[in-house]
Amino acid sequence: MLQTTPVSAFALSEEQQAIREAARRFTAEEITPHAARWDAEHVFPLETLRRAAALGFGAIYVGEAYGGAGLGRIEAALVMEEMAYGCPSTSAFVSIHNMAAWMIDRFGNAELKARFLPSLVSMERIASYCLTEPGAGSDAASLRTRAERDGDHYIVTGSKAFISGAGASDLYLTMVRTGGPGAGGISCLVIEKDMPGVSFGAPERKLGWHSQPTAQVHFDGVRVPVANRVGDEGQGFRIAMAGLDGGRLNIAACSLGGAQRALDEAIAYTRERRQFGQAIADFQATRFTLADVATELEAARALLWTAAARVEAEAPDRTMFAAMAKRFATDVGSAVVDRALQLFGGYGYLMDYPLERLWRDLRVHRILEGTNEIMRVIIARELLGR
Image 1 (cartoon, rainbow, N blue to C red):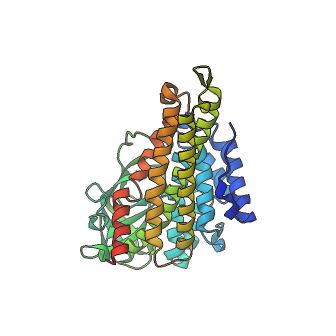
Image 2 (cartoon, rainbow, N blue to C red):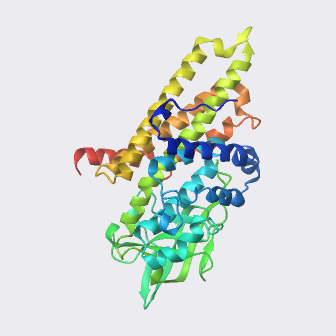
């Protein structure tokens, strides 16, 4: 099967094309051959992640001062899309780790950066993002995990839900309530796995994303140094939302990577599969389906790159564009995989082919990093000026 090069590649610089090719080679050699086994056996491929980090993929937009690649949001989207071509679940975890590392780099003080970033860049230590709680999902500003000041420490009590990497990650960038109700009472702490009082729930039994663990994280009177705070007290919600602008771009890219794989698989299969005396690729219905999904993928990719440029430039409308790209690309990606699976007929439903895994992995992209319904709320709020 030949991997398709997106038509929109003409817009990329030589450096960006080289980055994409490096990610494509790494994926072909290190991810694609193993992804089905990781999914079936629920393997978290930590050593593969560390080899990706050796190429700079563990800290794509972390500054070079602490060993990061110092690249931009378009470059991150390129890497995420290519890695998702092999395994959306694994690429999505790399996205989460990158988001957490960037939050420390962007909002942490010099001491915090020096203490944590070198090991995050190499993925010697890995990081998770902890915002969602059992009772605070889309209404994230209502979170109840509490951090009470006690001298030079906070005492943290509460729980976080649906945490990617829970139990495996070393660091948890955790949004906690240090003040009153609402967004202004939230701060961000780096909580370390081995701190007394940190524990984890049972692994969630998920439809997809089997190559990374997901569980609840519990904090039972955890003493966290004030020195582990990212930014000032009361800045946590703003930090969390800034991280999500980038996370939404990356998860959009992961959807495009999985959908591009599904399209390429469908093209190869319909050329070979024969019914009624001819290749099913020769039927007009098949050709129209392929044409439509290829067009939709290119449209989603163009919007993603536009949004990435606006986030990189810190444009006033960056959050709206990130929401647009996330909503559109994840809806399109999920629909493309579904239509590609349909072209395989009964074979698409079997684990012998990657379509069913891609279908399972991409479904959650419309839920996480803010549901697509919340993306519509964000977009409409910006359009209406409130």
